[in-house]
Image (cartoon, rainbow, N blue to C red):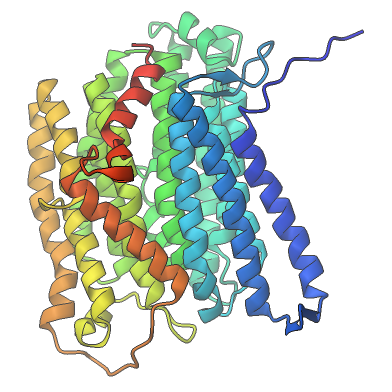
Length: 506
């Protein structure tokens, strides 16, 4: 009789909560759509969408809590000790918590937005939850099979979300482009995994690390193909071509969701691979150096000539991916810690910037052209002020969290004697001032091109934007906590350092 494996369900608790939440949302929409009244109140599509959003946020909150408790405990657990494929430890738990938080905020942003664009369908939240569970699986993986399963579970729902506004041609085009290019990237990565399996005779990260020999062509090609596959996901140049078109064509709330969560998952997976599978391979660091330099230059230069806010933010995200790669090039604990801190801050900066774009959507139309921001400060002063803060932080101006994030990345690079790449990053940061500050100039110093009605910011969007702007300002002054009470516990730098030290076993 085959013995029953001793499974540790705590490891898959965050994934389980999001997966179960997706099923509850799908079934809930079916039952609610058949109900005429609830507690004496008429059931409408808007009401159903709000309920499903709250249900999704509840399950994401449970996933966030489960991940955070694992991180706080400092313990690591393997789902199946006999066949270790998933491990929830300090590193994966912290990233899982950040992904759950980003997804939760994205669901809150979507409540009113989906109604405004008349695409208020419950499956939106189910797709978000399924994609989030894939990201969590990908981050917790210690085996290439589990990693690839997480990658596909993350990607396929996002392909659908990119084309969620089915009435618009550009949304369908974005979905098709992302699907074709994403499928190609997945195939490339899978072939790389197959070569590594041929080298090690196993798909386990530990086995690949023990058998990896760069002198073996099969191992070198396999490593290269896996890196290329992840480079597509993080939008590193020259694998970035899909990003501007998909960001522009997808609904803004989908762009907000994917711009932060996919990067979190992909960068965390790359770091986990370096720590557990490939070790310190000098050739890999050289490749990452080249990717970082190209990504920083192309992202910033191309952003200068954009006249669409979403395309501008797309090239901005490419440039920020380049800054993050600088931390990888260092190959040090300080550099990797700076990467985790940067990703955490980027979550609030970018989600906040896209949140403003989401809040400006009215009557089925989105506010995407930079010219549309002319004179916005007169009509929507609160949104203008928020957008200014996010743009200033993305530019890395002192007093904001964006400055602190870039400072730690550059400081780690200088300490590792990576001077040339650091100088390039600083110079390109100066270039970025032009296109980031261009939007505040339009809002405050230009006459409005057309008159439009002023609207109140919906509750969900107001809460998300409030959380993002407070985080950007607070961590710009106290990056590691510093006030009395609960604020003193927000020691993000220490969290990042502890998680990285655990990952690398130091």
